Image 1: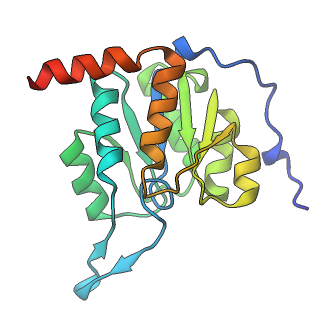
Image 2: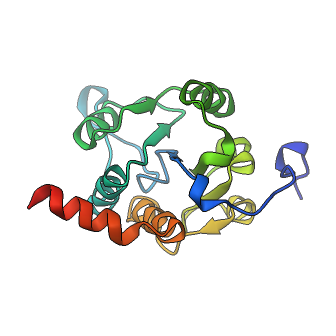
Length: 186
């Protein structure tokens, strides 16, 4: 059994869903199925799920920003973020907790405003501090035990969309976001 102070959660208080203002995601294993494919010339290829993309559009309609914090660097991820209008992208991050602390300071927010979704050990420091943490169904079992919620769907197959729907329902804003989205395109 692994024991570490890093696995001990600070005193956890009930989630104030009305205070959730930011979704932070890992990439590999969360937005993707975790596979890393290299093409000719070192080109990296990632599969993203269209369902997650619609979830991001609904969050945008609800004015809840998304940040992606990943330990790797990927032009495919940068392209996907540009395509979806996700401006808060942090790649090649060795210390996710330090990066997220700086991000929250710049946004004048705290971990009480964050839902964090991750799937591996490098996500744990942020997961244990977030107001609410989520792991995809394909996360390591130990990470699922640390998370407040585990999706039924695997990363890369719509787990982020499931997480987004969960957040929006808990905040009581799902229907309004759908209406705002639809009115924006009609």
